[in-house]
Length: 201
Image (cartoon, rainbow, N blue to C red; front, side, top):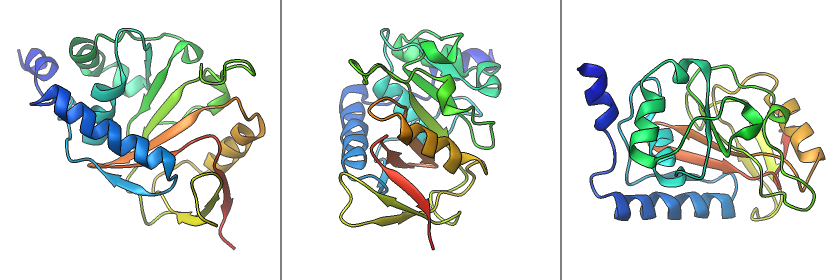
């Protein structure tokens, strides 16, 4: 019974208004990569999916967007929660997913395992939603590119040591590649594939 209540509860109280609010915040953060956006509306998904990641799922996922979940998420009540509230089905293969979710501390797969789009249709790629310990306090990285005036320093805490290698390889295949939404508690930080990252010197 407890699992059933987890599946049915925890969505937006006002689905249309709150999804619009989250969507605006995400679009603002993609337009200004590296800035931290606060979600006025957060979800309460089953553990181990975080609040901000849950809000992203409720906002962006629907019956046309196959979702890949990390092993820990897929073994929880999260697949049923996402399916019930958004209609989205689960993708067994990473490269079939429009969205991928990894919980805090979960293993982040190589970005090249996901859908990377094509030269003709670069938008047919996966957007990865990765929850981290915090959006500040980690390894400082200098971000440059469209939407950033000169440069901005980002320092998400809890990314894998190989993250910069993953991201550099992702940038190298532009316009193909994945886009990232990093989440922590009720906040998000977006990194489109157009953003260049380097260790702060």
